[in-house]
Length: 145
Image (cartoon, rainbow, N blue to C red; front, side, top):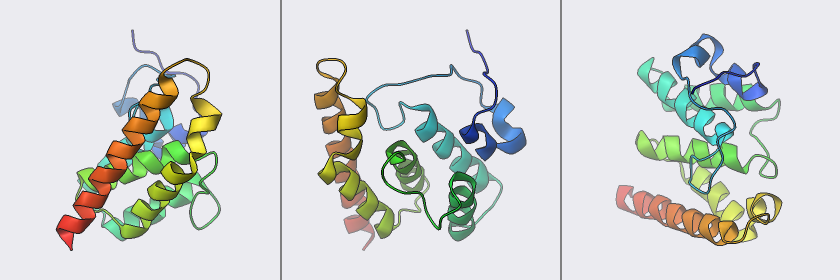
């Protein structure tokens, strides 16, 4: 059963498009997009690509919807960054600075301690997913240069 909760901050990323993406709310897991915030950013990016927006405009729009700062901070936004990096990867827009952010998150274990210590095995699964994803990002950057 798919339900829609009252709008959250991340739902504002979609504006009127929120209803176009029904899915179970409160989705969590160890995958790159197995989190509501990561999925919201990934879907919004794709919608902007479909609307014909350029990479620079997309980045500006997404960042301005997420924070008043120039770009979202790493702490408390690691899922945002994974969703954003995955969207860039999937649409051939991968920026080196975004890969650097993911490297920092992975190297410093930013979301590992905060979110993945409750259930045995989740931490190790999430760390593997992060390392594999980072390696995919690095390979892609290397192949593009």
